[in-house]
Image (cartoon, rainbow, N blue to C red; front, side, top):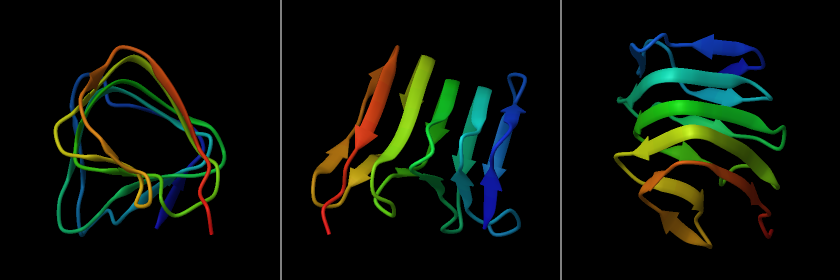
Length: 108
C-alpha cells in the first residue's frame, strides 16, 4: 500500500495501478491531468484526509468504503468508466462530473 500526500501530475498520460504498484491511499494528495487504469485488484482508496482528483479519467474504482468520512474533491472533470464505490451500504454512483466534492460518512 502506498499513501499519496503530495501531487502526482500525469501530464496527460496514463498511470497504471496493478500488481506491481499495489493499491494507493489518497491522504491529502492530488492526482491530476491524466488517466488512471486499474487492474489485478489494485484500487485507489479515499481517506478521511481530503484529497483531490483534477481532470482525471478513472478506469476503475475509487473506494470510499474503508474509512469513516472519506473525502475527495473533484475539479475540472472526472470521467468514471467503471463504478464509483461510495459506500457499500449506500450503493454506487456512475457518470461524468464537471465539479464535485464528496463527504461520505460511513456507519459502523
